[in-house]
Image 1 (cartoon, rainbow, N blue to C red):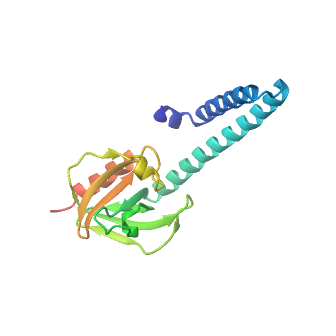
Image 2: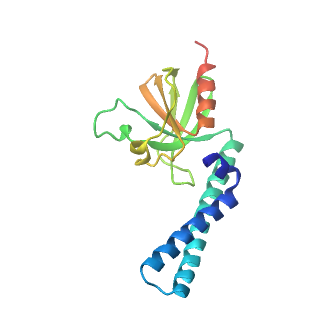
Image 3: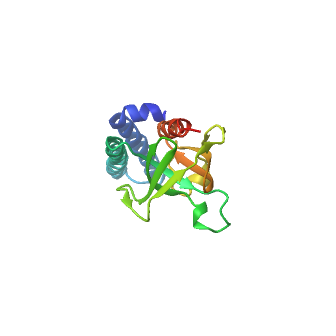
Length: 181
């Protein structure tokens, strides 16, 4: 369903809006509102749902295109073996530039990807040969988007987990595996 929605962003936004409008209309009728009030309310919410969905998808596509233009990718990084309560155990969003056996990670905030903090070079990466897992609800609580996958690597600084889209993870794994041993 997500793949179809990604290929048809306008249509999927419209279907989302129509579904939302039908739900609003149904709830308004159950609450005893008049038909004309319920229809106006449903139309308003349909426009709101469509606009929210459409512009969020547009912003995501625009950000991805801008990063692809510079050979970069959006990813999330965390250190799973950090001390309890440490900020290193929390997913950190950033921009990754992968090269042979190395990932340069620049922490960033918001969808505008404003740099925050100093850049980190992740070197000495070795795949743990574990299959990528889907980001679950614990990951999503920390802003990892739905559909992202998580993979674990050993690095010079200890084990790290990287969450990214399946395409980005594939690029990262190819860069790590192409490193001279």
